[in-house]
Image (tube, rainbow, N blue to C red):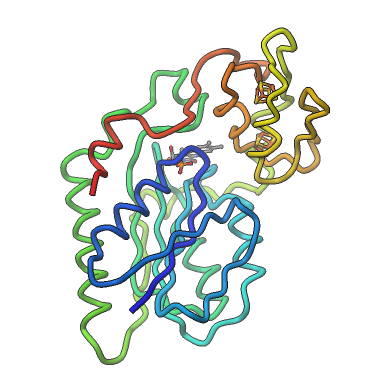
Length: 261
Ligand SMILES: Cc1cc2nc3c(=O)[nH]c(=O)nc-3n(C[C@H](O)[C@H](O)[C@H](O)COP(=O)(O)O)c2cc1C
Ligand code: SF4
Ligand code: SF4
């Protein structure tokens, strides 16, 4: 049996969690596919597909919607959905489930994992949740992986699982796809700090940055993912409210330790 996990990860938490899932599902060989890289995988050679994303304003990042939209229509290809979140997931898992199901995948399992925050405004407010996931959350994550393993090896007919993300998440509002952009607002570059390395332009998932050689932002196609802000090696990118603090360029060591396979 061969699987693929298509993941969307701005700062690496979700990618790390996907590597953990793949490592724990010993009897299935998984390829990992980075949705932000911009291409479309050939799903025909796989028996199961995982879809994973970080929570972006209590929903799935816009690029995940467009990615799923471009996939060919399926006929009950087995799938699972997964997301990481820093505070509250809201509609993320339900929306992911809906998008994937509408594409013809048969969703057999789903899970949300609490992780440290990658959203700078939360980190600046002291709500980085560096301790996440706690022991109970880690145990539930392992139960999910174990359940998935059992479902995939039970043989016979696979069934759809109804994904219910919990009562609190169910009550959360659904934000528009442009909410994160509006919230982030204009981005600026500290020209004295910028080394013209071009990294922000390469990492922007929406091609909203042109480095010529200093970055210029196209606000019409920016989706406020904070990736440029988080990853600039010299912290040269800033907004009206956030400058020089709150960056989350990669998973913190505590999370790496917990998700070591
Ligand atoms: C732009 C943005 C919006 C976010 N919105 C939410 C949110 O609504 N709820 C939440 O719990 N976490 C939110 N987060 C936190 C991330 O979902 C969480 O830290 C996740 O693990 C990051 O995964 P990644 O490192 O794979 O990108 C947000 C992060 C970013 C960058
Ligand atoms: S990543 Fe930072 S230093 Fe590099 S071009 Fe962008 S703003 Fe300049
Ligand atoms: S410009 Fe920055 S915040 Fe906007 S989409 Fe690109 S990487 Fe994300």
